[in-house]
Length: 455
Ligand code: SAM
Image (cartoon, rainbow, N blue to C red):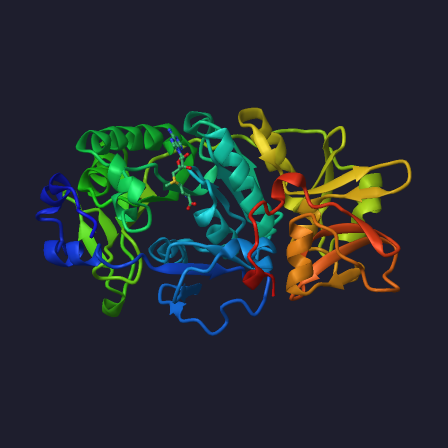
């Protein structure tokens, strides 16, 4: 049985909805497992599982499978995400009107749970900037966003202060802040070992710093969504009060159903927050709040730029995509497909931040042909007419392990997209019954696969 820290329990006394005995008892039960389906990559995955009540594409799982041996996981058919945090979908649906082109910043984005959710909420001409300051974590974020396949999700790796210089640029900013992690004790016992009162204080100071740094980037009337996976009021309601003390804000409420078990709290300054506690919800500990900025904010002036559109590369790559895009040459051998409405964003953003991933990488021209990228293979816009080869599970896992298997007789020579349940896993170049595997090395499954999992 997990032993919750006494000091944490003391801090929770008086917090609306806190039930000490029930919370302790819930920590004797296993964590809930859930996934969120990719609405643009339909598959049979978890089709019959119960839905998460506040997020239509969320699904509860009875047990935690080994996701690594499921090719659909690698195809981006779903993202493994804790159910409480999917409430972000409900907050977005309640407060973000998606009838104009939106710019959304997910400031603390790795590994990508909230960003994949936001990407599924947005329309094609909206732009999501998904940022992660820690470089190693940013590469995991980039991989997960590539798998999710949306051209309008770009990845940056910057300090919040750098993004703060984009004055009045974003309609929505999501800050899923680094926190003391008490809400994840059931999922990750290390969070319990690392928990201390001093760390709660440190985290709350860091949360304030992050929010102050990024605040100028939010438009007037824009929405800030603040979340943590901590139970501590110092990192939750007290942060909302700190915002109310330091900026002009309006707290926003969302409608919930009593059977969901979500607890609405109000901070001392009357700001609304939503608490998730495993004794009440089918999910882990989580806190989320939405706040509207009520301050006059200068917006960056539109900049003049020389287009980077490369018409030749556009012509050479048009067979890859089923949707309109603008092909930009960002660098030597670096060609990106972006939504035609987003070129000005590219030129603006690159003056302020390090863009790790802009749109969908298209690949590289060689003297003989276009070398398509893995990013293009994973795109939700990949052309339906490209040569494809459907694999069984064993072949799919062999491809993902970069192991050989025989191609069926008569397989077309050249570039082929390998698919599993109709979803793309990556490219091969077929040379008769042999092939070259173009799955990037660092995407390879390294795990030993047991006899049972191959079939
Ligand atoms: N939003 C992510 C998701 O849903 O998958 C989880 C984000 S996690 C709670 C917080 C993130 O903030 C981590 O990836 C961490 O590296 C990042 N972080 C740590 N210190 C930071 C700082 N000073 N400024 C901004 N982000 C920071």
